[in-house]
Length: 426
Image 1 (cartoon, helix red, strand yellow):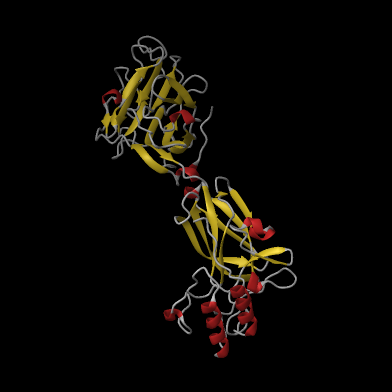
Image 2 (tube, one colour):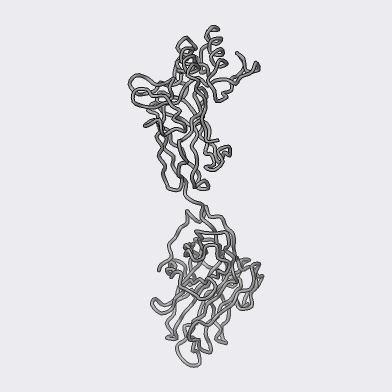
């Protein structure tokens, strides 16, 4: 199984474990003796190893340069790498001895293994690292392994890195998803295995690794497509008007009706607002689209809050576990909690007229605040504004034509007579 590059995903991952191998060693420090901030690394012989087998080192003899740069000798960033141990040449970086016969029998099969990694509370885990790899094609190779506590399994076989650097490797970024058996597992280990034969035909670099990270990928966001109508704005042809300003031109644009707010409420306790997004446009066809972050996957009541129409709630909790959620309030009154919408021309719309709270502090011309009821306070507020000849983008202009008149007053009056109020699960 090949490793695949997931660069865009890694950049968004929430890192919970990392290893940079910075031990301050310039050369010849064995990985078997390395203890980092997460614990001690070990080296296991996983096959035949000759007396002059190559070994794992942790040092800056192979410097951990940034991705896209060629390898180089010691700077200040140590790496985990395979190097020679033939008694003649030792740790000069990611350069191995390909052998060729006695006295340099260098057949090697070794795995550098991380300390135990506690992945409790983490799922959908990505392993990422930067590396360089060479070796004779088909015989000398590096692979990545994992353990969940009892045995080791092959995770992936990274491709050999580009041969664009003279006598050196090219630092390359790679990522691979850990299997589901690592999810919420307190006993995970990561291993890097190197194998070479003794035929004397080699190709440097060997294998070098740095910047090892484990992270969880945030769930993908959900696109929420809503369809709903606002009673005061609905025209005879099934479209909606654009809310007008004091110049009697569209406040938000020719194809936009108005703005509204979406709230996602807890499915077990409606009074708990989990997520809220403001100033969303609904167009003249009744369509609105917004993005719900992946952190809010689950089932929620969808609540529409609008400046002069009745707050309306979905009939049931809506799932946000997929990439797209579509909810059409207008198709049936049963799509709203308590069947709380008005039938208009074969569609269902939010009732207009919830403008102000009860109480003298909200009397005209003070700024109105909706209270979930269409009552005498709303009606009086509209009548006072009408009597004053108010124009503009105003809450009391419930049909959005730019001026407050008897049309607005009558709409609010009839909904007051009907006793319209906000209906919610609590």
